Length: 406
Image (cartoon, rainbow, N blue to C red; front, side):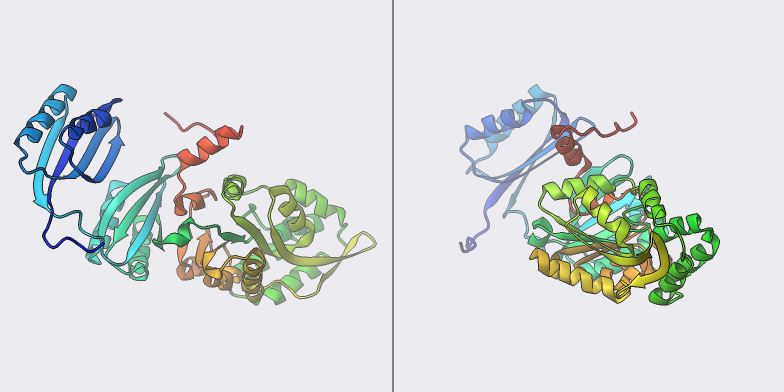
């Protein structure tokens, strides 16, 4: 429809006060007597304080309507504001983003700094929503008026200064579609490094741990470092693989993340520089759709110290992500990659949305987004899913979640 040739006279009605059942219905019952056209509605509740704003086409004369609204406000013991103007809400400018802020805790000075940097780019905050209050505070800002890449660069610097995590994603339909999540395993999906757990059984933990740390920092070629570490496991009883699997600890929130997103139709993959003896079982336990890892050679019940076939290295992880996306029928732009080490960098870059999860400095510096809280389900907040929605869905399915402190 073409825009009207002359601006429409409008009236903005705002009620503020203690929230209670029936406020909204009372307001609209009154408006119905004047047959006005509703153009927009916004309503929020903070600590049982209601702010209700309604934009309507103004009648030819507003005197009687004003009087009726004043009566409603007085009877509800609320504050009324009436603002006459012309035109509907302004159209949001180009360049719209979802900005998610995670803090433990989230300090007011941090919010002030973030809002200031957004304003510096010429952008506007159109809406703010709380996604979680426990065990971390997560808020989402709907921002318009600047390029998401520019905003990401500016806010990444401020996130480091303020000690918070900030994710910037372009607004669009893609965020609401079915997506594929590809995760690293060691120190991402599970706590710790599997090869170090095996090395503890083989009596060479210190030597292996040193090489692992240097490889994850990007100081060593991953394939070379893996083969060297596996060689130290020669002769280890294969039963140690079962014991290590039994000792694995999932990252807090990992099972919740998979459970919630699987309900929404998401697909999951794990791609690991670790070993199929454990990742295949992990995939079966969690309902992961795709898995790729290295295969240890076992002869006569003992590890030979060799890896069979090609090593899943940095490039191999990115290749796997693209193949998994093709197998799942999902465009690469709709993939999310989560990892912590230098060998995850190509995968994070290839994905539509790359998340460095409690990652090494080199990874945090290069990834689109960095999450440094110890809970994997913080990823849900980046996808626009609130903790309240998660808890409600879990309760309906018979799961229980810890109650937040009072």
